[in-house]
Length: 472
Image 1 (cartoon, rainbow, N blue to C red):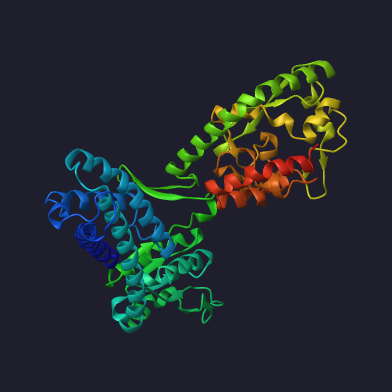
Image 2 (cartoon, one colour):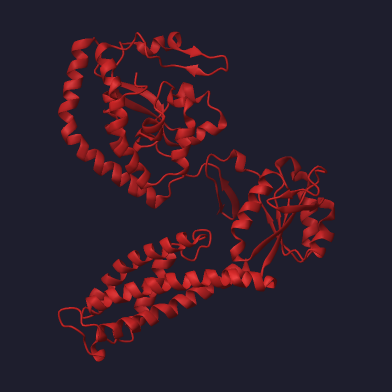
């Protein structure tokens, strides 16, 4: 890990140098290029005063740090690093423009553009060159790399092996695995050999010049952990223990320290704070704009329901939202009054135990209700749930608690994001199969969430509604 810290320090120093070089180059470009209202300006005017250098450097470093440019997990791939630098450039532009307005109002705007463009280009270019150089360095200078041994060749060990291979460009070499299962001895996992048993760990570490040991034992083998750690403490190696909790995590987990104690969260949100804020603003703006023309439609639908059958126009039903929180979902009533009391009579249990709770010929559905369901108009009142923050415009559909009680563990991962009015299932797999049997479509959305995916789903929703497949 020391290599990562050294590289981070090197990047900060190099960034500082490039930022100041860009500031000088921008001043010279402004004095050479005949652009702007005044054309080229004398270098005496474009040369920035001394106090501009630390201000510009400070703004850029803060922007890069804020966008996790120095976090290697965040910039593992080249395109991730490029994106982080570009986002940092946008952040720095706003911050630096504000500061210059107060301390150097006469700073040329065109020179400011040159500065931001040059710095962004240089930061990206030299990082690309560094990656190329590092690839060459790892081939010709293997002594600089950390040799890793994984104790445990099970599912968790293989998963960690893949991570280490992905980080190989930052100085990791996966040498092999150790496992007490005699069947695995001599096998190759991820094209890496199982070198022997855990009892041979001393000899293998010495023979293979191991620098780091990652312990990935299953829970049933944790009784041996003390013995392994005691052996490793006598050897000049770094020790990392990876707890076997991943199978219990609901989509995403996160390790942190609370009051000095290590804590692992098994139910961490898939959408981070900044993305969640953008999604919420997107929901509020789009829903508020949509509600203006829809209010008269609400009135007409409510009147039609009241004229068709007795009972209220709206229907509230308990559903599960994000993280399994129960809320009251609002819909237009499409069934006869008291229809929920007849649910057990309608349910069909298949041979494998699967429950089919919706049918195309459900006699409880009213005439107006059938039309509303056909074009999903009964879902419109859920805009109020979106405004209240109980739902989102896009996400897996909220499910009824009694159905969720019958979920398998993996199916509950669909609740890792806000539940939505429309979603991936509706635009792709909407058919005669109920949504609780299409969890794979919900999990696709969970694992691939982005604002662009939300926009894509919203644009395709009207066509899915007009087709009306599976809407009953």
